[in-house]
Length: 416
Image (cartoon, rainbow, N blue to C red; front, side, top):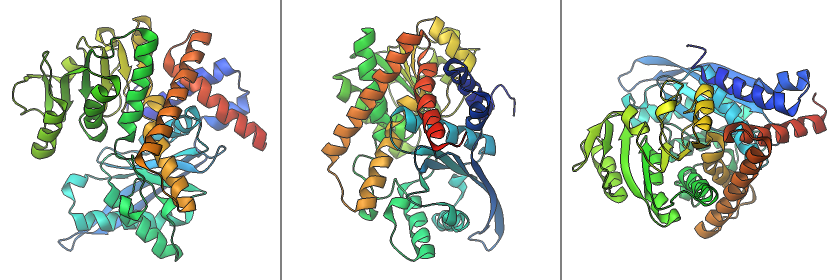
């Protein structure tokens, strides 16, 4: 992988900039640049046709100075150890920036889940858990869903864990179905948290909250962003969306409910009637008030950053913007709400689920959303205040807030 686009190298470059400004000593800096623990293993899977395939799997526990590791499990054909390392690092800073008492972890399996049957998925989920069960627990490491994993997959994993340890442990996994101890409000939490930060940014930057917005990537987060943006901001016109089938644009507006229903029914947005097909690159460069990158890494680079015209970029995806692009966007007056702040709503409600599961008492949807709003709003203003004080872009400001909190915990523990 090209180091320029290697997600872990990018995460380290971003960390280094914050560490330099914070004046961290060399030992603490080196300690925080790397995961504390990594697990790489293979899972032999008996396929439905009787054959056996071997899958490569990972779990990275980046830093638990502030609390148990927390982070999702991704099933993707391009999954690599460096991708998981980067995401575990970002989870560490994400938990710190919203000030929840958790560390950061991430896991993955290199596979194409679209080619697996439901029974094969179940066996793969249980196989991953059989290897990792001894390293997990509500006070050690708590997985959750991520790309191409689902509440059903989490249910299988929790069941396998409980079978191994011989007792009930609903807080070992979050993102579970409600019937098995999942939390109200988890389904739209990532997008909801991001839209809360956009609402605050519009107030501070005098951006029209009822203006235009576009969504790049139309999975769970992208779909909910399309639906929640008008609800939370009191209006707004969705003008473009994209997924792996392509991108569509209608300057007069796309009905969010209609396009979500179309996506769920047809599996793709490209065939949605009444909109013009455009390229994904063209969508990113539309003149809109708010852009939601909600797909995968490295879609905004130094090659296209100069053509980004959005007033606010809210990163619901992990790592959609490279460091070089950050500098260009900031210089052009584009306000980026960085991924590990913008999409922290998911881990925040996962934390709520972990808490509820630990003491076996569950909150109402209204309580979950109230607490999520309060935490995301405070986190956004903490980062924006740091950005103004240090005269830096929002990503560096978020790192300054988060890294300082983790570094303080490491020092207090006497680790470095």
